[in-house]
Image 1 (cartoon, one colour):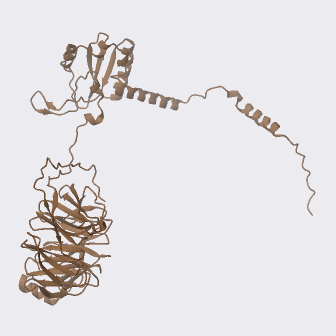
Image 2: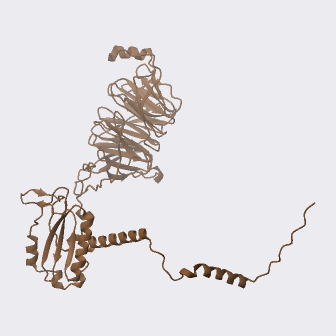
Length: 552
């Protein structure tokens, strides 16, 4: 059974006004004894406050001590007589700056306008600062003025007493009169350090001097003859046309592909020309008979790039199957299948020494390949033994080997260019143009500007002029050594074409490096050369070295 319920005392109802008065009384009882009194002093806060006041006073004295009291002086004191200035400038300092001791020069001006210098050595600059402030306060009461000059004095760059060029040297004390030159900004008194970035070489601008029409589709590839008398172009109209370099006239048209032709190369040891296209075919043309004599079968999709090894009879092709394949030219056998990319292999070049093969891909990487490892066939081994006299080839190694993988780019690496004389190369993508060292692949630097377009092709000549061509028809010229962009040209579409067809798909220098040929989306071929009338005065070099080295 529950116990009896307890009776609650009745609560007296109270109004809001009564409750407010109760709260007010409680607050007054709590705070009225100390009402109107200051808080007790805090020693730590007083110390911080004194330090802050002293620092502000020191800063004002150092920065504005020379001109703080000029407004209250008569004109005779502000601008003393010339002979006084000359006498003061000729007064040498009686103090020698010793190592480890900082010297400070005080310049005083008395009531008659005469100046008097005092040089004080001090091991503690802060103590000297405060002493200078106290001196200035004392002399201001008497009508005189003190200017505090701190640290090493600055001498103008010129000839010293020995007739040699002099620089501002720390530890030399000189009296500095009170003038506006004392309060120079930091940028004016700092010694300028020259930039370590190499200054670009002046190159004349390039101009378009010839437009060649003849193809019925986009012109996608180009290659020059080793004799520099003709060049060939491949197009989306499935034809290869051969043009005369000097006159630009059409010499020959070759047919055989059933899709657009993406890559061309001309051998410098044989009368062979090689072509590759979207029809998965790689063909070898005999230029003495003007017909196809070999076909290389193995790619599973379109072939986008093609290169010839400079010293041995090897052909390299890359395509949409993400594999770079190496072929023996004579036997038509596949020597290597350099697999490792995750997307289309769209650019390749070769070198006589390691790394002998360098590929760029849409997976944003660049790979160096070692040709010593691969799937060697017997015919290939016999060919090398009998002709090139290479021995001890291990036929048991079956797969290609990646030496280095460069992951600096963020977008597809659609174009690469090997420098003809230096051990370096450049690669281009939509984010940046980067330069790398060979053979290890060390990153050197980015080009100093961004083309901000998809770069389809690039080339560099022996004079160090690199040209890059974009999807929007932009043709930029760069100085190879410094990465300076000295010209930004824009192609003009031929009459009857759309403005959207102002794209450049391929370009190449001739063997002399004095002509540049571009293959464009308006079905034309344009030839460029340097402007003979340009001079450094008419086209000055507008170069500003970068402040930092951007790596990505």
